[in-house]
Length: 210
Figure 1 (cartoon, rainbow, N blue to C red):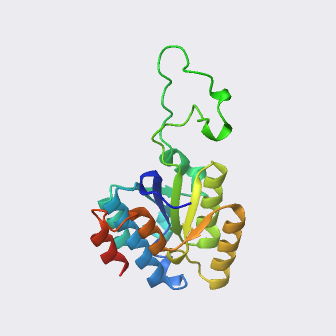
Figure 2: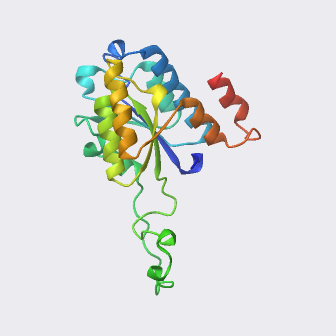
């Protein structure tokens, strides 16, 4: 299965000013987070950020904060390590569309299971969450697991994630893969969202990944 920009949302977790100096390979990780944010803007992928107790860890680093805002995104300030507990899932899932008036159109249960549509989900809901963040083994991990529990498809961008230690980062990736998350890289996301070299944004996205 490939990523589709039209079905994706991007979540960037806790790239905070007082945390990033302690993060393993922080410069590379932040650079890739910025690439993801700018790609999301170019390809019209909804973008969200989070910040863990910003009164203690500070806001997201200014360059990333600006990139999120330029993409029309919002920052969820949270206290739980799992951002779903602070309402992230509500941001990612739009309100259910009300059923149209009149009798139901056919018996959905007569369809094969893979063709049945849950009535409570909006037809335009984006069920794929591409995400990255810090620390990988704490807030990124717990938020990803929370979104999996909420039936989102979760794709974790490994080269835009880290922890204070390499061992903790790698342990997070092992656990996420075992839980059903897809592990990808920034360039994988870029070229799968584009789909073709004829995409109008191809040159701009290519400039970001080179």
